View (cartoon, rainbow, N blue to C red):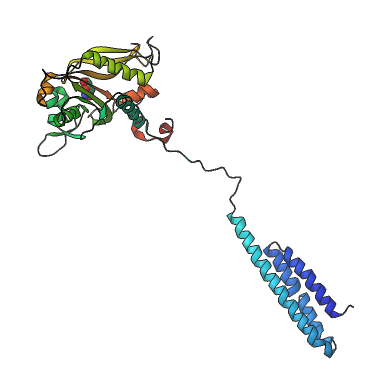
Length: 342
Ligand code: DAH
């Protein structure tokens, strides 16, 4: 049997190496049982202390105490190392999981279309103005030369705001902003007026109770119908491509004389006739005309001094043509699968 001091040193070396290799709570417990428990190897050495010669006892006792202390320290530090590791293991992300998709926000197709229309007109010197969505009868109808019994004032189309005066409506078009602009400015005037409008219509793929228009107004000395046609043709080419044809069809609006509706050659079939243009070869994009002298009188402009043109288009309609959308309701349902496509 080697002297006990050698056994102590050997055990210390062996146990220290073993403690350094402990890798789990189970292994640590096995270590504790083997070395540090009441029947463990360290305790067994203590047990043998009573048989050693008296003079060696103090020295060996001291070495044994040091052994026990040192192994306890090793054991404790191994345990906290193992706990730390298992925590880290919990926190490490599972790299086999599929990633989280991040969606990039986009402008609504109507906002994009309005921005495109604004870009085109501001590029040729038009400013931008707006007016109230709750409008009075005077600006929405009367000053625009609607006769008092005009069917557009009918309950069918107009949302009336219920107040005591009975004079307020949700504007049915942006044309009333023309009146406000002329009331507050002297010619020359060159402005577009985008905004939201409302009509009391049955909701369908073609009509919604709320929609958007862009109104245009140009007033100066000697403004001609030729300028109206040139401006609108230029706009259509900018928006739908330089090859697109335009045609002006006589029409009627109370606030313009003469009035016209503007068609573009069908952008889907090139004019041959298809389902989308209802085999006409043409698609309607807006109304327009020369400002009626009666309208100028309402805003105290002298029709002998100035002339002008006006136009109005539905932003939904333009966007539906531009992006081949066949149901107006899609714009307002906020279905991310729809909105993501633009
Ligand atoms: N306000 C008309 C509508 O809602 C559109 C329109 C037609 C506006 C002719 C105009 C115009 O300025 O000149 O249908």
